[in-house]
Amino acid sequence: MDSPDYNEDPERYKQLISQINGSVNFPAFLQQNGYDLIKQSAGSMEFQNEVDRIVLQTEREPTTYFNRNDSLDKGLFFKYLLQRSPNFYSAVQTGLEIIHNGQGLEPKRIQIKKTKTSPKSLEENFNIVPLWNSDYLRTYRGISLATLNSPIFKDRIFNAYHIRDTGGKIANTAFPKYDWEGRPKNYVLYNRPYRSRQDNQLKKFRLVVNDKDHYLFYSRPISDPARIVFGESAIDLLSYHELHGRSDNFYVSFGGNVYDRKLGFFVKLIEPMIKNKGIELRSIMDNDLKGLEFDIKVFSALINRFNPNISIETSFGNGKTSMNIHYSGKAIRSLNHHSRLLDEKLISVFGEEKPQMDQTTCLKLPDKLLLEFPLKRLANTVTFGKKTNALETIPNTINALYLPFQTSIHRSNGKDWNDDLRNFTEKRNEAIKENYKNTNLQQQSL
Image (tube, rainbow, N blue to C red):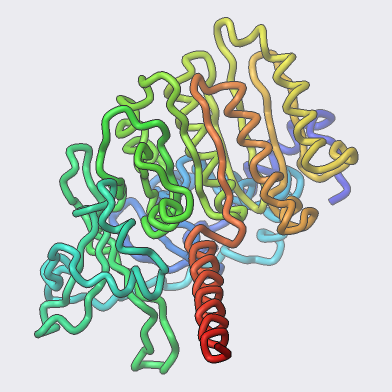
């Protein structure tokens, strides 16, 4: 689109945005782009795909939306496009092409996707009992009995047997999601992959017992922990403790996803511990770009709670991360210094050509910084061995500037810490076998 800069003709762009918002049939557009309608009422429709849960307020004109999986993803149709475009002008171009091609203009009959339901809830279908069969964790995940029986994790993990499993043949591992008082409110079940009867394909077994997802799995609370270690899955916590654990660690799992309600629970859970002087928050999120996104979300929530003069808004879309860092009070005096430091860190990650890179900026405004960097480019420009440092540099710099306590990021060598543990266990077992073989040969030669 050969068009002037926004500042040269803002009225023209406002008219184009109004045209985009008013011309496209939002429900039809979502239907034609792979979303399933899962709920509908007189004034709203809810669509879902593998990433988003988009709720449309259809009684409004134009239709507005919000994304249950991202609190900042909300507004009119153009905002939906903007969140999923590399820049403003690309979003305008996409919107005009949608109108020109007639996509989303003619609504079809949209039916709610039917899902199979069980006559009983999942909670009624499983018996949750104390952990006595730990074969899945020990044999398949490489976690020792010493870790499972440690004071930190003892009696925090359970078995779950289906009510039709007479004799207890299939021992699922159940990780509770506790409330603030340590009462189980939900369970996540794990077991080895199984072969589906429908297509004869191997499927991962991971089952959430009910919908109370915002609660978190965490280790047994201890007084005055030296560090709070948080990661994605409970199995990652056990694996990390097996490899690097200490008795004064407190562990928290986010259960594979991070969103506002979970963050609120996490902050409230650890707030009493933060008052301890010298405590460290350590992230062991997965060694990938999603792990970096989760780190930014968690640490931004902590900054918003524990730094009264800084407020951070984050958004993620189309491979780009945006952070609006608002300054108030005495913090404004540090804005210039922080701007230079963050700009230097972007250069250290992306190289001297940073200013020419698409959407890589540290823009200083009178009372805030706009920090943007491309996750996809980060993945493409660093090797896996060096990515660890790159994934740590940006959040570590932000934390050092804005948080009043120590933080660190410990990345695994593989994708996650259970990968590392299983690789370590495999090499250790091979070494033991080789040593045993050599010992027998020496004895036979005597």
